[in-house]
Image 1 (cartoon, rainbow, N blue to C red):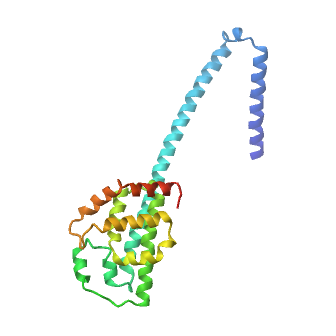
Image 2: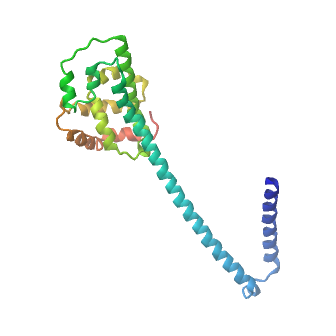
Image 3: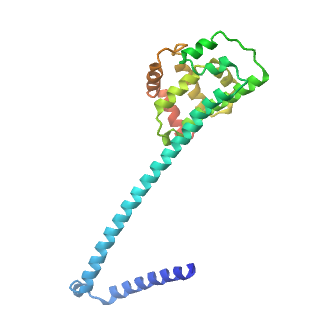
Length: 235
């Protein structure tokens, strides 16, 4: 059936070409303009242009809608992977030390007060869980640099969250040991986050400072160079 349809289309195409060629040879242009055939061809040509234009419009609208749906789904996946997953890990892990976990929430005064004087002894289990959590957080930074242009969440939102994580002295220590497992742009991004996080008091009683520093970061030439390098895949 498919072969028959393909043959029919090819036959029709060839017939139209042959018919057009014969018409061009035997029909005189001056005489043809005054015939009903000329009127019919002109009408059909106009209708073809209209149909083609409508088809282009419908295709464009469909493509835009598909892009919107894809972008929305990608944004949801990004939030799930780069924000909900890390926060779930911080609440689910049972061996990670309490002061390690609270170090990612220095804007939570109650949590800070509950753990500020703790000096829990490190164990093999706690060290492994804390390292895993750190890897997930740093990977979130790398994913952000890779996919930020496809995500609708917005740079400010992500940077505010990342600056909170960057305040953790435990994360910084682990980063020094693991940084060469990540792209150069990710390492540069982490160092810039740590630099800005140093300007945030511990504990932080003014959450607005995260937003202000994030806005400042977005105008920092160092961050703009990181974005450019990542978009050019110079990692």
